[in-house]
Each structure stands twice: as C-alpha cells, then as structure tokens.
Image (cartoon, rainbow, N blue to C red):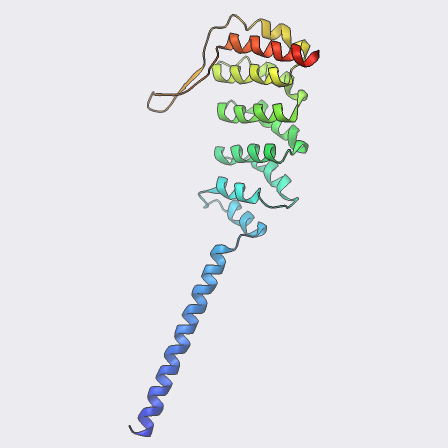
Length: 210
C-alpha cells in the first residue's frame, strides 16, 4: 500500500473515532441531565408550567430532607392543580408539619372540593387541630352530604363537649352519602348514615372527656 494512502486512511479512522467519542459524550451528558434529581433541579421542573406530572414531582421533593420544602408545600396549597394540592396536604400530614396548620385552615375555608376537604379533615384529626372547629361547623352547612359526613367525623376526632349539642341535631339524618363518577355509576358510599355517624362522634367525644 502506498505510504500516502496509508496516512490518509489513518487520518480518516482517527477522525471517525473522535466523532464517535463526541457522540458518546453527548449521550452521557443527556443521560446525566435526565437522572439529575437534586432538590433544586426538581424544583425547577416543578415550577415549569409545561411539566405535566407536577404532583409526582412534588411527591419526590417531599422525600428530601430539606427545610425549604416547608414553604414549597405551603405555597402548593394554592396551586391551580388539584392533584398538586392533594399531594401537598398529604405531605404536610405525613411530615407532621403542624407549623402549616393555619395555611391548611385557609384552604379549608375557601374550598368546596370534597376530595380536598376529606384530606384536610384527616390532617386536622391527626394534628388535633381544634382551632379548625368553628370552620368545620360552618362547613357542615354544605349541600354536599359527603362534606357534612366529613365534618361530623372530624368533630368526633377533635371536638369537645361544646359540639355535642350540634351533633345531637344530626342524629335523625338518615342520608347515606354517595358519590357518582362521570358516567353516573356509584363510585363511593359511606358505611353509616349521617345520623349514625353523629351518634358515633358523640360517643367518641364523651369517651375522650372522661
């Protein structure tokens, strides 16, 4: 093989290897970007309005031991995405983040969404957040029987003897709350009627006050 031809082939091979390495480096960089799950990088993804699974991102952020997530979860309570709000409430509850109780109460007062109210009710119960009782009594005037049911249940968990007279007014209510899906099929039903739950809540309060 002529020497000049050998040199040309060598140069071409070296050029191909160099290009291949660059492509590999680019792929490696792209992979690193995909697996970058630091708190700051996930916050940027969460704050991007184009992100579709922001609730899942918030769930992942809650796994970090980072004090900044307290404000992040509180701010998420006013998010436009219902699923984000639900994850925020559940995360605050799982963290026993009682410092955020007043923020939870603000959302409870403003919303008529049963799913949010149900999650908030369970958080109030776990936090023993008696400050929420006046708002719960007001919310019990809702036309949504599921919301009324949640209110009565929550009073049974954190209520005082002062709420017994209110609960007694509910014992004759024979409504058993149900929820139907978008197609009109039954998707959720309570085990007790509102009246039966009221009696149960009264007994819980009396037992707790002994």
